[in-house]
Length: 187
Image (cartoon, rainbow, N blue to C red; front, side, top):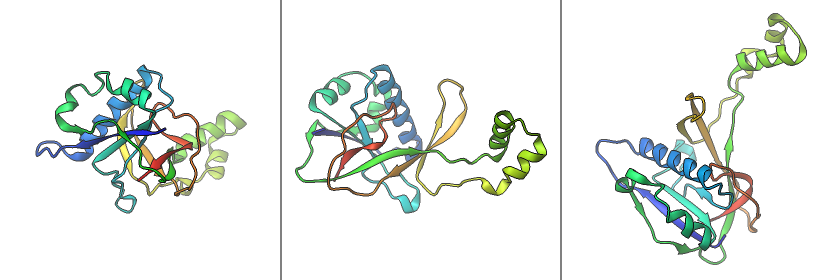
């Protein structure tokens, strides 16, 4: 992983930055799935976790060959008018690294109760005792509002930028360009 491309949202008086970022991320996800790419990671360099704001910039990380091939495809489509894309740039020497990963909260106690009932053969009253409403987990992380392409259900994709590390951890990225173990350069 030695190169990157920055995609910065251009101001638009009619479209909120969060909507543009969601649209950009959705297109990126579909392109990563279509190309079966496991070697392109992403980060949000302008993230402000205290405000739950991912910022106005999405950075793609990868090798020169992977990013050149990916950016040569028309994956941005109509969003090209709303995004400034940098040229393929080399990652600066001696940078820190971090993971950028998806975090899923166990936020629906009713769903957890149904699962308990199926797995353990218990009734609704016992499931309510085992899984009270108080177990609902709430995340204080920035997120994107997405819609599942398979079920059309809306969901929040929570993003965690891990702690800074001196050394890189090599591996593969998922179809969102995220990984809990593989790091991206952070600068």
